[in-house]
Amino acid sequence: MKYTKKKLSNGLRVITVPMKESQTAIMMVLVETGAEYEDRATNGLSHFLEHMCFKGTKNRTLDQIATELDSMGAENNAFTGETYTGYFAKAEHSKIKKIIDIISDLYINPTFPEKDIDIERGVILEEMNMYEDLHMRKVFDLYNELLFGDQPAGRTIIGTKENIKKFSRDDFVKYYQTHYIPQKTTVVVAGKIKEGEIWKEIKKKFGNLKKQKIIKKPKTNFSQNKPEIKIKYRDIDQTHMIVGFRSFDLYDKRNPALSLASTILSGGMSSRLFKKMRDELGLCYYVKSSNSASVDHGNFYVRIGVGNHRAVEAISVLMQEFKKIRDEKITDIEFQKAKDIVVGAFANGLETSDSWAMYYGDQELFHQKIQTPEQYIKKINALTPQKVQKVLKEIFKKENLNLAIIGPQKDYTVFEEVLKI
Image (cartoon, rainbow, N blue to C red; front, side, top):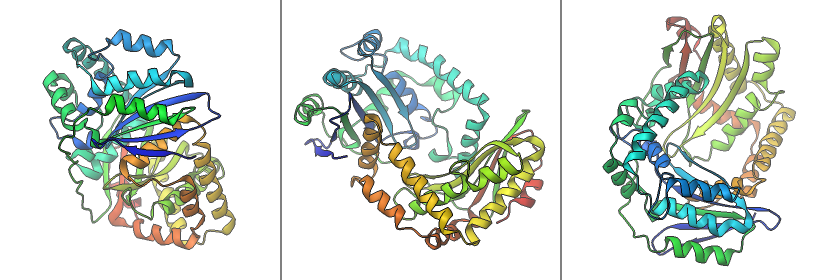
């Protein structure tokens, strides 16, 4: 998909992706800030602020924002991650100028009304309570805490209840003025659009923003020399676990190899872990591997939920499978299947205007040198089993190995005995 990239004089980046056959258009604003830009006292503020941008602007009330978006039949939302925050709306393509007007207003002119801050505290506290009960999700927080401890990467995106209860309007204003600046912002418009008209609209809306000092996120530090385990006791019927290895940051050329390794392990019903742990042993309902890469750290992991009495067995089987994929020959047939799955899933994930907006926005925000889909596919197809296993030998080591558990277990020693690579 062809795209055009431009930059305003204030540093804000603009990407347009014309899609002639699409019936929709989307505007997405991505800001280079998130949980890893927070300290202990501001943990949770990025996410809370994202909520508050919808509560009113200098030009619109909360009700007006909601009514205007609903009246267009628009899909709209926002999201906060570790290193970026996003806002978007998508509707029938003739509505794109209206969408640009609304989303730019949310970004440029939020007012953070005092009364709505107090109301939204309750909403976020209930969101936190919901996540506490979603153990297969909560185990990720425990895993990050194990990996990174008391630093931004080791804390949750949603923050702590103590912080949510105490944030003031001044906190929002200060954080917004520090991080919502044009040099850290990328605007993407994709779909059935006229690029010239879109560029004029974006320039009109964002062109007067002033450059500010760029505040970068603190460096993530970590060290490890042996396997580490963290258990959070919960009296529940199923044990949720993540076992993984520290890997590479977002910019490392070895990441495509880990994508293929992850696919061999859990890419579909014919994958190794699905067949072994579900079809043969009946150990679990879900088992999934992933490689997660951030700007200055990464990890390759498997998440799984099992019956409490089979948790140790599950870890033992996983360790066997890690050793097998690292050390034993991968057949050409299995390797080609993994390539086809990766390429197919990648292609299927780029079928809509919002997926293209996210793809190009993510590339621009963090790489500032966009990798085309064709270039990514070329990298996947250039890999061999030997190259993948060379990378696995670099990370599948005891000094990279970590295990997080949520369940009714208390004895660390039984897991230490099987957590060996």
